[in-house]
Image 1 (cartoon, rainbow, N blue to C red):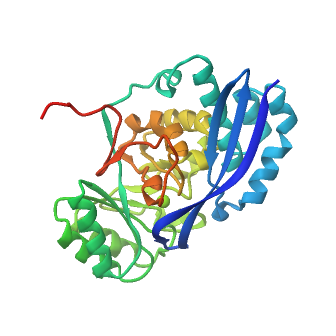
Image 2: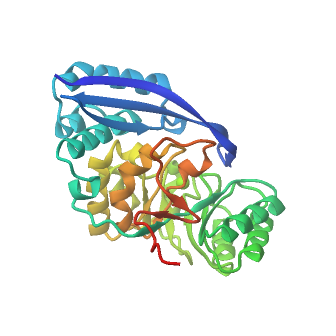
Length: 328
Ligand SMILES: [Mg+2]
């Protein structure tokens, strides 16, 4: 018999996290704990209102499969039992963690992925005045970050980007509009981004307006986030996006995320790996996909006032998986 626990947690942020869709002051997550013969596995997810989820709806979905889960439900069965989303994610990751601990392996070994010494992760510059965003970008750069993800809404695009680029002339910049732009004027904005050497634009248009990206010539890669959840999303993205942002909360766990990564690469998409506001528990589960991604954006826990223990070791703009040389 397997013991199952699920519960919500709220983790205060050290600074407000502001994107086009609104601002956040805490990370609200759902945790699933599984225990078999004294071995524990844990999974975490972040319910997201944009996808019709709340803490209550996610906990209710988890409760709906509780008896099956207690009786040993497998990852394969789980994929059929719940739709993609935060509930399935927390359970799927708990099952992966449980299997790894039962077999005394790392998640890297379980997924046959090779652990790199470090993973460069984007650090987010959240929406503020152009000056404040430039200051934030400079502070991140001075702290070692080389890849910055600039959140934008539909205002002060030029002012914000010019101020940021002037503050961090050497940084790799990616921009995320979180669906806040419109087809009208998109071409000019893409040109501005290219002129400022922005490396990629994430989800400029609302997902339901993806049609406007068909036959739209653009000078930098465009990445689907809100428009891409699982393998089923891929056909509609062909010819519109060059890259997809994989998040375990959207795929409903690592199992579908691995399958999505394979299918997307076969279909010619480049990969980005992202996260929601979360603790290091959620990041641990996503790490095996990092070596396959052109851009890794796993800075969720760096926004927390306090993270879980053990925390993923964020140092400057990277996750340090192997200790650097003790010499010197
Ligand atoms: Mg995004």
